[in-house]
Length: 339
Picture (cartoon, rainbow, N blue to C red):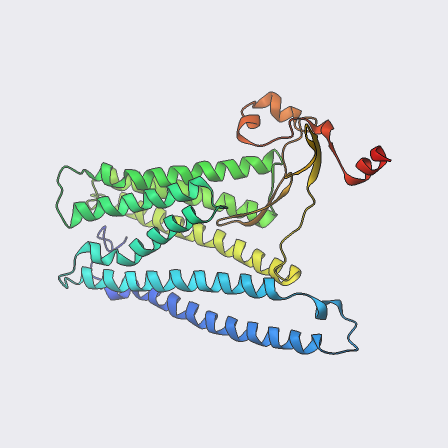
């Protein structure tokens, strides 16, 4: 950003991208260390499990969930790191005037976006907003390639960046839904997850303000030193707050991974007497939210959340709630009633 707006116009592009390339190298080293540590951990656990006189319950624990989650996280982060590394190399060649189209530069991002759309369609647990996010990101890439490579002059910059603005606004709405759901006790966030959500929200605000500022200048160099400095500060805040929030959530997830061994939290279902007899229904549980990890949720109780109902009746439309709490009984009550 400092090179683009003229504050550091003389620095080379390789020097600008050097921190990114070093970060990919450090991430590769961390992946190698993680694979070695995981291999040592599994071999030690298998050796301890074969001891006949072992009285430690952890030696009899099932480590397959830990292995599955570790491999899933490692493959996903490794794939994203490799894709962005290739994108940065292609971007450097494009900026160095190597006669390359911008569409070729975006090739790694094309693969990621198409994979995200296909994954959202095939995976039944993915929410509709996840698919819509990838579609908006893909539309933004299509429009910017049409604008840069093919010179479609009918496309204004506002039209090109409108899908990106829509994506950021939808992300803010999703964050508001999660944070307010924690306030009314539909979601149960940990302290780390709640602080990370606030960091994400602030980062999105800075990003939207930066994008609006750049669009107001039609993506030309600002004419005052104050605006140039402001663009650099907003860029740093957007990336730093988002990165620190993601780091905090990842560290919290790692601690829970070590504590529970990758086991998914099992919560009993409630029983409801329906027209055709007793039925087990989903009530409280755990869902995997991107950038938050495992998040507990529980339908609203009208008897407990009546204050929220008086303040904001739309909560009962946006958030699930127990429509008839009296019909839910546990297994012990059912046994007593049948006896």
